[in-house]
Amino acid sequence: MNYGAVCILTVITTVSALFSSSTAMAQEMFRRLADKEIQARVIGNDIIDSSQWSMYLRPDGAVIRDELGRKLTGVWKIEKSKLCLSRPSDQRLNCHEVWMSGQNIRLRVNKDEETFDAVVTKHKAN
Image 1 (tube, helix red, strand yellow):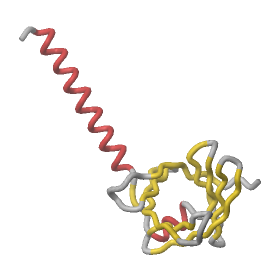
Image 2 (image 1 turned 45 degrees about the vertical axis):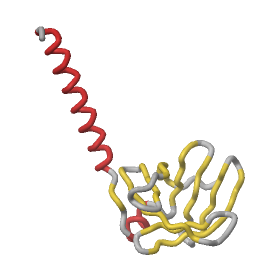
Image 3 (image 1 turned 30 degrees about the vertical axis):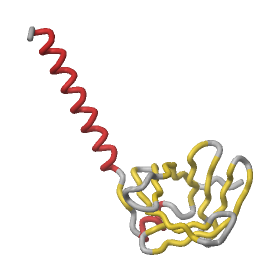
């Protein structure tokens, strides 16, 4: 193997290691919230995933969703360190683990399942 090939291989290995390391660190920055942390960091704020969808968790237990300009209401509660939300079509609650990193939030049914990623922002009154 010539010197140029060794240099290129070293650079590729180093970049791969750095990318894997930064991806792992980004994953580790998310931390699961407990009951009181969910109450303090999420309730009373908006959760938005884009300009097309948002959810406002009112302190009184109501959840107001805005999906493509359509307002839908439901209820929320915190139970066993999970945020439980009703779907607009029924009052049955679906409970989610709440993971946060800064203002980024991930809601998931179980640790190993796909997440719903969004951002928590200060509530903007309509």
